[in-house]
Length: 324
Image (cartoon, rainbow, N blue to C red; front, side, top):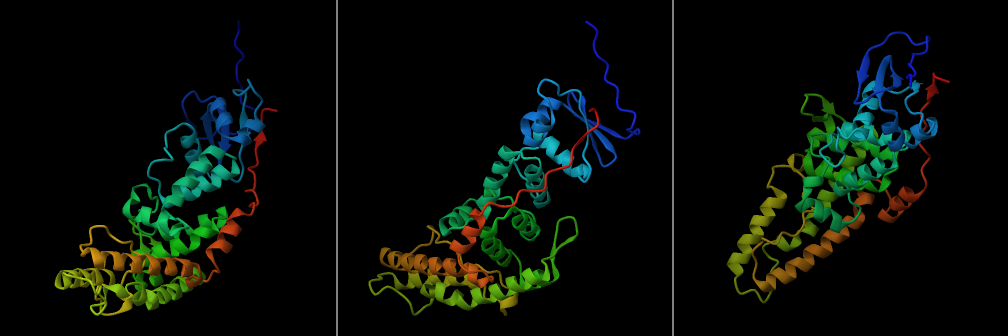
């Protein structure tokens, strides 16, 4: 049986070609032709599924105006399994993923990306403690990634993640770095907008003002009346106090360790251990509850309510089928 020969429509000028495995369907993006398998893009994306007829995925010649080539290539590499969403991703790739997966309605990929980002940006203290002791799945590992992720949180409606990403900026960078920008690995600067920068600096100072109360149990005058190893417990508290407060000459040079979890390796007698653990738990929970207010928001509940509100759908891509 004679095979039907595919002829490109005459309206398409010659253009650079990027071909993926078994690529027969043409996507014309930003002046470049990308050859992909029609069935692959159809089963991964609801938008492509609606645009393509079943069992006719090879006769495809589509124009995607308004999309950047690098963003489309990232999306296609995810479709082909060349990029593993469960693996390490940069802040830029996360932003691209949220934008493209939302636009092209790749729901499974979007859910995976959401679970990935929420590990390092929890909305409860238990989740923060899990991240602290096991940051392996954290996507914000590069310098400046916490700052780069802000626009993604805003556009994706992840309002409840604002306070913890602000705290993580204070945890990782000094006041000078927050003001002038954080130097990325490639030599560029990650800079907060002026509004968010002011909120971050004000919140940082509020946390430092309350830090003494959170770690009051490390004060030399604070001990259990039943302690039998006073000198040993006192030395351990002094070591922890130095770890938290760094004994820096000024607050601007300090990193904010206020929410550091209780470490099981801290060596106290059983009486001091019980007393200090209760004090630490209560104080950290109280500060966590105030964390949104430090950075200009109301409460965790209000932010989580905003996150549950159905978000306006991303503007769907314009797809022009040149075959029809």
